Structures are given as structure tokens and as C-alpha cells.
Amino acid sequence: MSMGPLLAHPPVAGGLDLDLPGRDVRLRATRWPGAGPPVLLLHGLASSRRFWDLVVPGLAGLPVIALDQRGHGDSERPVGPYDGATVSADALLALDALGLSRVVVAGHSWGASVALRLAAVAPERVLAVVALDGGLGTARSAGGTREQARERLTPPQFAVPEAELRERLRAGALASWWSPAVEAAVLPLFGTGPDGLVRARLPFEAHMAIVDDLLDDDEQGRLAAVRCPAWLVSCEPVGGVDEWSVAKAAALDRAAGSLASPRLLRWAGAVHDVPLQWPALVAGLIRAAVDEVRTAAPGAGTPA
Image (cartoon, rainbow, N blue to C red; front, side, top):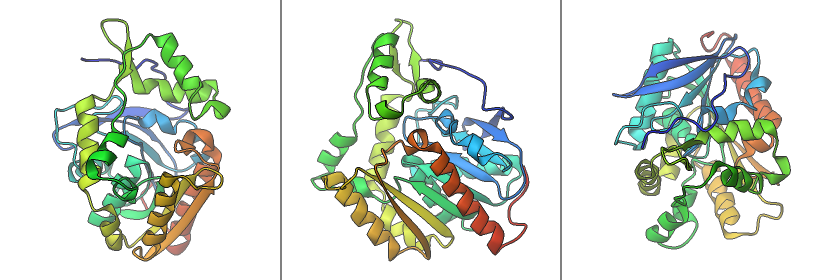
């Protein structure tokens, strides 16, 4: 079923929407001009580049590219594949098309996994990584069998009236931070079908293909190949005593022994979708990664 976004809106001021090539797929992106090391923004599973709309103003002056990964947002939705190697190749081909040789990559959730993979397989292309609440293989280490982990990560399948969806979103994990701007960043994740009901735009089969790849991938084992500065953030409830938070904290501790240049942060009180909750903090962290690269290697990166 083909669905356009529930809410389509122009990019954040100064941005240009454009098509880019991936591996046998057309990708959609938004680009903002600037000077200094370019920043590539990678959204999470079932999300889109619009998820970064609240963060982008805090990166003003830097060259920024927000990419819709295959199957997501306004990019094409092939039947497959959706494995990490293919998705990483998509990103590298998109950067080639933009003429960007080296970038700082910031990823959220599944996007953090893609960002760390890029740093591991193409170290000459990645100046630094910012991984927000993802990329550490936590899904496999949170207890239980693979089947139980897969069940935890299986999204609900729904088809509801638009008003009901909006009410669900307002009452969700971001309820305390909900605003028209947050709503505008979230609604493009959904589309209206011919029956007038709203569904997730990412096909269920594609979603589960990515889940299976994450469960079978050795994310922790790959960290030893990441040589650039890696800023890893674990978002945890205050106290952090639930099973999931404990698993994330343990994964973060393990990462410290694998990474060449770890920058490890635990944000108590942060929800998983922290770019919507605390966009200024996220932008500040990305700027810190850029500033470190610029200080270590003046002239690094390619103006966009």
C-alpha cells in the first residue's frame, strides 16, 4: 500500500530537499549549507529525516545532511535488502553524490547502529560518531531468547483514524514535551491509506527485516574497528533500575573497553526519542563532536 506522509511540510529554514542515489534505490534527503566538517544525520527505525527538525536549528552554520534511509520517509521502499551492510552502502553512495569525503555521523537508535557501522567499515570517511541510544547490541543482551527479543521489538500493526493516532501520540512517552513542533516532526512517520485510516509508512516486512538484522549482528564486536572519537549516549529513566536500562548501562560499559576513543554519556531522565525531548542538548553534543574534530585537524571536512 502506497502512502504519502500524514503531514508534509517544507524543510527547516535554509534546507533544500533533494534526491540521492543509494544501492539500487532512490533516497531523499535535506541539505543545509555551512562551513566546517559536514554532519550526516541518520534517523531510527520507522522514523524519517524530519525527526531531526528540532535539532537542526542548533546546528546552524554547519553543513548538515538529514537522510531518509531506504524504506523510510520519502525514500523508495524496495522489497529488500535491509541489512546493515546495504544500508551503510546507501549512505556512502549518497555522500559520494554530494561530494563529501569525510563527515561527522550522528545516528539515533537504529541510525546509531548504521553510524557505528559506517565508522567501522569506512574509517576514512567518518571523522567522529554520535550514537544516541543505540548501536550497542542491547536487544540481544537484555535477557531471554532471540525469539523473546524479537517479540519485544515487533511493532504494533494498526490502522486507526487520524484523530485517534494524534491522541495516542500526545499521551505517549513524549507527553511532557509535546508541542506543535514535536507533532510536526512525528506525523510524517505515518500515512493515510485508501480506506482513510492511518498506518506506519514503513512496511511491516521491512521493519522486521531490520529487527532481524540487528538481532543477528555483532554490534559490540564491531566497536573495536571504530577508531574515530565515538560519543555514545545511553538514555535512562531516573534511577535506571529496570531490566532494559541495566542492559544498556552494561553495554555502554563494555563499549568503553572496545572503542579507541570512547566518549560515554548516561543521560538520566532522557526518553529514547531524546532528539525530540532535548533537541538543544543533542545539538550541543553534535557540536562538541564537530569542535573536537576541527580542533584536532583544522580544515577537516568539506564545506557543503
